[in-house]
Image (cartoon, rainbow, N blue to C red; front, top):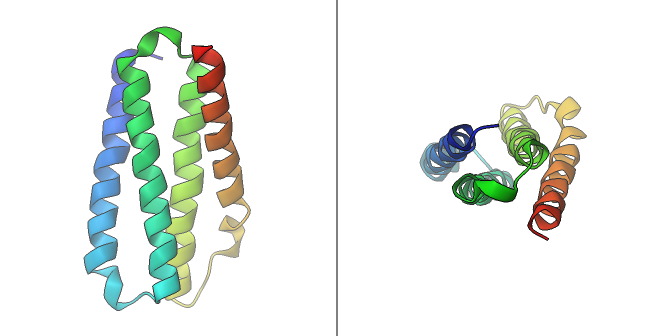
Length: 122
């Protein structure tokens, strides 16, 4: 894993987080319930938090293993994107229930990423 790939991944997820946040605040506000909008916002926030972590990892590349990068990257995809899919499908009346077990797997990968970051630094 190169430093440029890690930084580019963080920048890409950060950019998408801003786009999805604006989409949720403007376009989806009219079609989502308060609870659905809150869930969507949780996905956006966690995506942005972990995009920033990827940037920090990329700029401090020395002690980071590829596994740490992959845990954060796959964690973002599985956690945040499954939330987006659940919320949007629920708003359309056809909730994609197959995504429900994916969200906690993504969350677990994010936790493992944090643990690996701690271990890498120590």
